[in-house]
Length: 411
Image 1 (cartoon, rainbow, N blue to C red):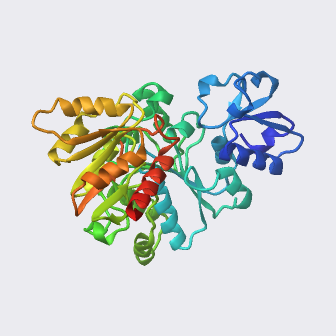
Image 2: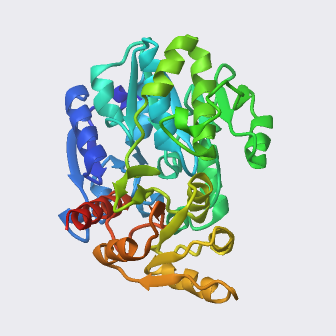
Image 3: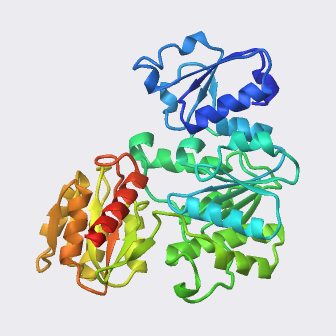
């Protein structure tokens, strides 16, 4: 909705976290004659029951649209409707934050007027208050929650990969995939869809579009991970995606190389947090699906201790267990609740007997790792499950891992 359509309305912002507060700030700066109120769980358990008293609801992404009973829109839709610059939207099951940040970093190094917004950057509407010219470029990480009820497509849409996640929100795999597909639902002929061609369904989506469709293009990047700040084949895909995007902006090769060498990896994403007592510890707390943990194990050599488990979303861990056995990982920490399912799969494998600790306590897990991990090998936190059965989010999980590794090392 154009901002002028919201004047003289009684508006309720549902959800008052960082995005909700940003939306309120944006409305107060741009609207006239409107009444703006907000509510969330902190307002009381009945915070959803007063929607009928308002002309329009602004729904934050974490609230399922099925719970909204009045006309509504979202901050994401308002941003798209009122942005005068170029929007690059990045989605995928994994790698969104890294790729969005890398695109931003390369464009910034190349002298472009670029802004990182959304989940990984500043709230989009807050940034729009400061910058909204034709030459502004906005790189926006887009989750399936945001795409579930989007009514616009970015000028440049990027999909990195696609496998099951967020079933608790979407209910079915098809609904999750459809939410992701919404990123290109409203493309125009001059827009671009950049996608990973190794995923067959993404190629099928591309064949149905009228905009420019571009699979990730091969680029010269260093052959060894030692020459890059981010490791693994999955990150090489992320780099190819980023380079395919920035090709459209004619960034020089020198600027691109400089950007790749100076890019700082994001925390909790296969992050080497140091070597202590001859054990190297990696924080990969962002890996909350079996596929992403498999990618971590394929990237790192000599993993001797692995931390797994968390909220049980019904994932199939069979392929992950096969990789664990193939790599002969000797020590495994299992957190509830999915840790119980993984333990059952491990027990069913004859001839493989790792040392196992079942716990919900990160301090105990770290002590187990220091006690049992062999020297000159790796302890990896990459749980293949969401965090919510034990921790508030993946950031809390990773921060606790770092904290207890640091504390134990000093003892």
